[in-house]
Length: 148
Image (cartoon, helix red, strand yellow):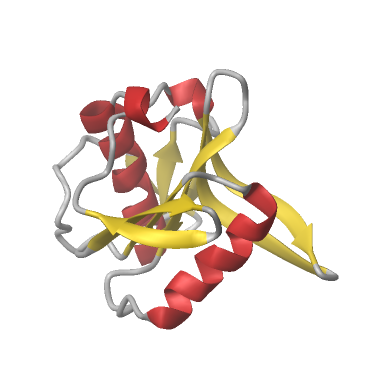
């Protein structure tokens, strides 16, 4: 898999019926190792190890409906009171981050109502703070204690 602009972490990867799978320790199962999943697994570890996000307060692929459509947020970080504080949208490294990506996570946040939104393709990472329906870029992802 492609080298990302994230710290290197150890993962359990194996072949299953001719396809590479990666152990998702949060979900406790092997999942197909796609380029997007490679980014998601790295970014989750990045949140845990670099920003002290407690592993039990991270949800992956959280499904929710909005305006008669079903969506799925890649990563949602919760406060200890189980209120969403961050959404992370992961793209494969070959996908350029653009306005459409920010629009996508903005739609998710109409339902989830998190304070921080992160968009990453594993190479570039953008973090916004949401306040009064306005997204403002921040220079650094906040530590978990600052998010809640």
